[in-house]
Amino acid sequence: MAPTSTSISKKRKADNVSSSSSPSKQSSPKKSRKTSISVEVSPNNPEYDPVVVSFPRGVPSSIIDNNNNKSNNATIDDSPLRFTCSKLKASSSRGRRITGEDDNCTYTASAVGHGHDGRLTKMYVCVYNKKKKTLKLVPSAEKGTVFALEQAVKEYTPNVANESMLFGSGTTQDDGEGNAKVMSASDRVQLLVESFGSKKKQKVMASRAANKVNIHSLVGAGDVMMKSVTKQEGISAGNKKGMEEGSTMVNPNDVAFEQARKKMLPPYDINADAPSKVYNAQSIAGTIAWDKVSRIVETVFKKKNEGTESDWIGALLGKKKGFRPPSIVALLESIDPAKKGSSYRIKAAFFLFLAYKFHGKLQRRGMIEGASLDDCVSALYVPHEVGLRLFELFTSQMDGNEGGYIASKQQKSKLTAYILILYMIASGKDMKVTSINQLCKDMKLDGKEATLVLRESGFVVKKNGAGNMGVSLSVPLKFPPPKRGKRT
Image (cartoon, rainbow, N blue to C red; front, side, top):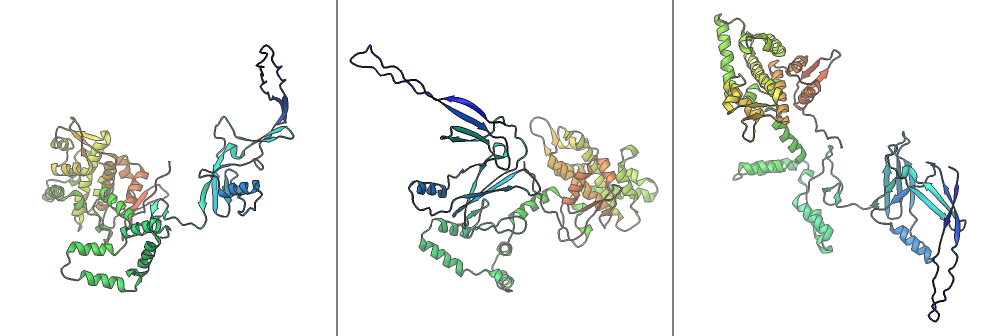
């Protein structure tokens, strides 16, 4: 843009002077003086546009002291504050990082630079030359961004790091998964003394810390001492358990995730030596419901052996083939009733079918209405004992005057996990299937959701070129680490 010149008027008020002796006479007003100033607007130039910064924590002492020394013609002791501007990423031209440094502190700020931000006003730096009578307007860098500088003191280690209470040097003790060390009561005392205590108290605390012996630092002594203490007579079982748990460092985050996992998954044995021993169908169904399922299955096979019932699959799943889920039908057809262990698999598959019916009922409306729990169970057309177990695991009673039971989003996910695990149990001892696609289709379940649920349950899910999702379970049982949510 070409420089433009405008005329700016500077007016001075005329002094009205009145004479006390002769009020009729007045002094003539002075003529106004005008000064022409040339205004120049510079075009955008990213390489040379000035950077506007701010100091939220106050102007640095190096700037204040140097300015005072210059005005007093004194010697300048502190080094001047110097800044460098660099790209935020080497591979991208967008974004800038500002870094500054003096003798005591460092200053950093950055801007991501995602194009225009839609502001109607931009920031300009105005430079007025009084001698030449010129006013130069220069656009600031990064489309008017003001870089708020974060100040950090050199060679200073805070007692509180990363918003977590850490004692001593304040350095973050990381266990490899981003979990910070938790501070004990004695460490809190040490922190308070370091911050507010007298020198005498600080020396006492330092002497105590120097005389403290870490039992885990002694080769072979930690386990021997702990075992000898727990073998003493007169110590209660609760105290022994507390001493054994206290001898090992427990991560509170792992404990929290383990408790949440136990609420969502069926009972499992993390120390199982075989895949078939990790999950148990009888534990999932409960004693009463499993006894009912067992009696039904045994009655059907008794009739089959007597010759009065030829279609044992139809006797379990219903005579109407249209209501039989193809995935469970194929699962039962793959089981040979004459083989050892087939009875357990058939009972697990039958309980899976009853849970599948319950899932279909909830999937339509998300609730089951009824004046009482017995009425709700009767609407499912499942054995009463099994229905009570399903309502206990996956629903909550509705509030208000309306009778019935409702399933939350978490309870629906829990039901999905139980059904998928029951399907794996009924598939055989190796806990391995080549495809769960048909089961997901019958349940109207998205493949990604099924994969996520199974992986959170300790299974391995692999998808082949044909699109079939194969699932397997191996020991020792390993659960995936928790995932952090996306920033909003």
